[in-house]
Length: 270
Picture (cartoon, rainbow, N blue to C red):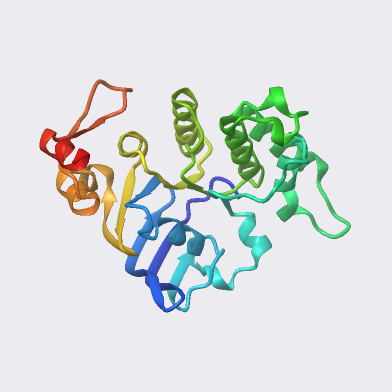
């Protein structure tokens, strides 16, 4: 169902671990025609939010409406045809070859006594091409570098042919060249393939360069959300991350810079 514009409408959402709420969100709307980045300090609830949106964890209160349907009422296989997730943690797949691993992304489309090999082959070929993993399809997963493996995980997600792709810290383990390639790929998936992107990010320069909208979180709540130029300012960054900075927009095509003020640098070092 690639190409259909969908959205998430979240109201009164509460997610709890133990005896306390890790998420408490009154209202949040995400337009998945865009690239939305979720930012905040460690432990603020970013990953928990996307797990709830993907139907991976239960929520006792509230609603997550995805394209007019309540997430918790959707069957897993149906949801997996429309939403793909690149998580921080993965199962042990070290014994698999790369081509074997990415083929698992077609599972949501397999039916009893019915399988379209032509559709599967087309989806796999496109994912391989987009992520540029042609040269190591025959390699074992445990022989890959961290950056190479991250590209394979992205290919696995794309094989599902999702309408929305969730990414939880996708640039982890990547060197700077791979990071740039990844960000360019994410933009391409959104602008050319019409795949909605919701990404948890830590590098604020990447957020400024990549995102259309930003959700800024603190202590399980949404502090502010909206267009990147409205959200990403020094005041909001100070309130959430507790440091003073200024934002410098450099020449077109170059990452903007988050410059920490000199006094702040001394405070951090001390």
